[in-house]
Image (cartoon, rainbow, N blue to C red; front, side, top):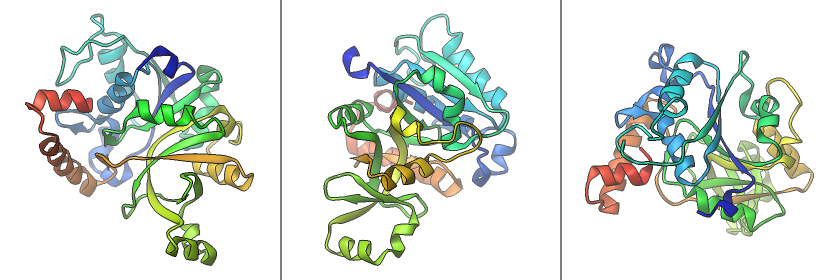
Length: 284
């Protein structure tokens, strides 16, 4: 990726959640540090952003925040060799500029921005949940957003999966609605039956512009979903980027197991020469 493409973009990894559905494991270990293929899940999120060319990254923390901060400092901030540790420890990349934003009171997926506005400094934010394992092409996502300047956000979506946040997309690729409320709208149901509206899952990866952040409360807890609803009610454009590859939300014990199954099926399909090459390509 050229520097020009990523100018005006900063990464945000959401890592403040309690991991309630993974108790009792998360009573003593924050979900972002639970192991996946031998390394903390959050390691994947950091590497995905870095490999796309984004080296300026913000990570918000709350539950057991000291453990997350210790891991990031030891492996990325205080790493004197500018080498990313992990399965591919000999992989050299530019040393990242990582800012840890501790929230004494959890602020939610919208409230997080009230603490980091100065750090974002008017840039677009590439948001990546810390419990996602995927091969989402961040470069292509940024390009899709840049080539549609009317969008105030671009959400990554995939085929609908039960238990995830449903999103409804018009045939022009832009968002119609988000959440189960649209299941109850008779007009929208008829449109779906005609194939004009597609139901997908939100992948918890997106690009958020300053214009969308401006719709959020200035302080306190809030959800980014509320900003999406408000934007749609004002006729603002929210785009989508369809992802048809590996994606798994490690939110509960069942999806944790499924992530391993899908990962090794993915490796087999891609026909990598060895496991090191596979891990390198996926950012593990």
